[in-house]
Image 1 (cartoon, rainbow, N blue to C red):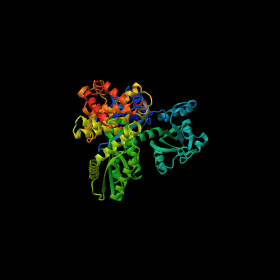
Image 2 (image 1 turned 135 degrees about the vertical axis):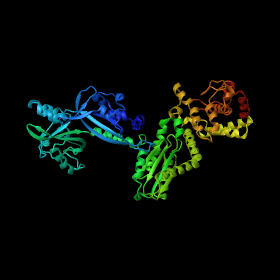
Image 3 (image 1 turned 180 degrees about the vertical axis):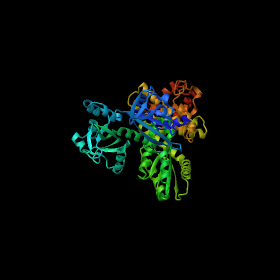
Image 4 (image 1 turned 90 degrees about the vertical axis):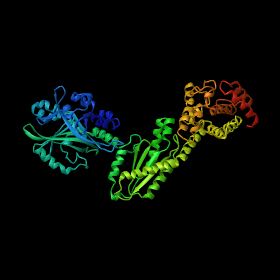
Length: 586
């Protein structure tokens, strides 16, 4: 049971890093009061390590009691230290989970200010001011009517005031307009009656109107035989910022910055009212993400997801909720949007995707929508309806989308890898002629034509500066280039309509003698299509030339091919090729 609850902490990204940002001790417990996490400061103060404390009751690790009006903590070693503490609840709804997890955050620090009332009674007048000004928190001493009669140096530093300014400042001058000033009289009355009060407040620096968050502790004490109100003020801006980060990460997708599924589901509940009807939902699925992850790496896949997120955001209104549903799926809530409106949004998404520069592939998404006009309709049914429509559209548009992705990659190759249309056409012509000479059937010849057209598709993952280099490549650069056949294999294997030539793409740089790459296949272990293509492409590159290599004459190229027969090339195919090139005019 505890392990299941402990899993909640792992749903919050970078939780340990976030808690380490607190200068105070922080202990996080589940709704049963069992400890899930504590930062290093908390471990140092309590004397308990996280390993010892995890799963134990908070009262065991953090036993506190009131003594002389202050909160005292008994550490593991038995020492007693004064602390100030604050409790806060945080609700976490992890992605792919329906239930809400409520966590309790206890924040505390060792303070001398807590025992300030007692210290003020026992220290000498000579040491009083030194103690007063050495406290980390700001201290303001009021008379019973609320007039400020003294402040410490920390208070002056926090509010950027001179002492005479602070003495004459009013509560309104030191407070943000956001506060509810009207509740102060009742708080003050409670303190006058002997109760301590502890609350958060938005403070204001009078000279520059800078607002900051503080915790305020009020208690009545005796000072020099006079009853006064001691206000301890702590700047909690940093803690508030960290809490906001935790809150943000609880409801936002870290990669895209969009809302996450948890927030989406909460908003869908909130918008489930008559006033938001008709209510529409769009489900979106990114096309080609697996291809990009396999071929280009997960960083490129992340870039594709962010590009889609941007397109969805640009297509919607501020009142719409755009969320990453998970993996390659997104979801959008469109309040007060009918079927015509949601169709317009879908068209806008497709238009923006089509206009976005491929990086690394053309962006496309499968979309499905559903519209709710009756408040009685269950939201889960609305989501299912949108998902079903999306999957139908993905199947319907799948072949065309895959073709677009392949064409966009091939188009990129023609711009950066010397794979011009003329080069591709010459390779297609020669492979077709050679296939006929080898008496291959029509289906195999069609595969050869396809292979000639897409065999170097993996070069899209090779940096342009390597592909376009005019001098010889370094060994490291060659290693990168050699990977293109494996990348091409992974790309093409993703698509059923091209998968029949995947093995040939992987093997088109193998050599007859087994010294090629990537698998060092030998002889007839190499697929026939790959043996044909490697010979044709070698000839075409030799006679066409490259920036790093002068073009050869037909005779020079043929001599090179004959010399490499039985080592680089299949001897039988070489013999057929000699006859083919004699019979066609290149």
